[in-house]
Length: 150
Image (cartoon, rainbow, N blue to C red; front, side, top):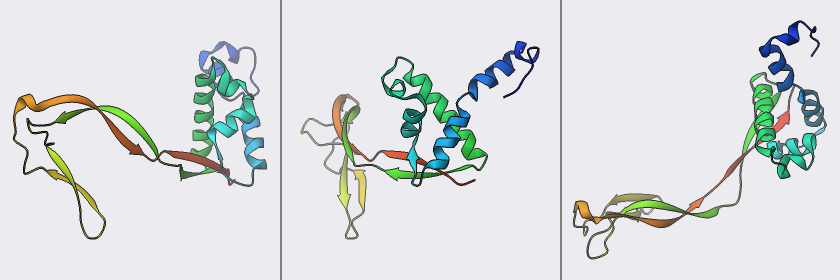
């Protein structure tokens, strides 16, 4: 980005220069790719090992996200969502359970394989029946991949 020394005195200009300093490297990397790549792969190509192991890795990640978002909005790259392998996580959730151990809702399955959560007919309602407990959930993470199209 070519600017004069007078234009550099404006904060918006110096911020813009800082925001696009890695843009050419990102564009060259994306042009050379034959298959879609993730933001992390682009970041590792631009910043090297500092992208994932530095105290500034979150800043680098944000910069890569911003550059890739602007390239997508400009129509230079195409974004595809890719599903990863399911992972199991443990979260704390408010659970309603009565004195007999019945949950407030149950999961049911129909003949077509669909799963629904409905109120449990055996549950005896009381406002004292709620508490927090750790619940395991299966999550399917998705990752955005980018491919150069312009």
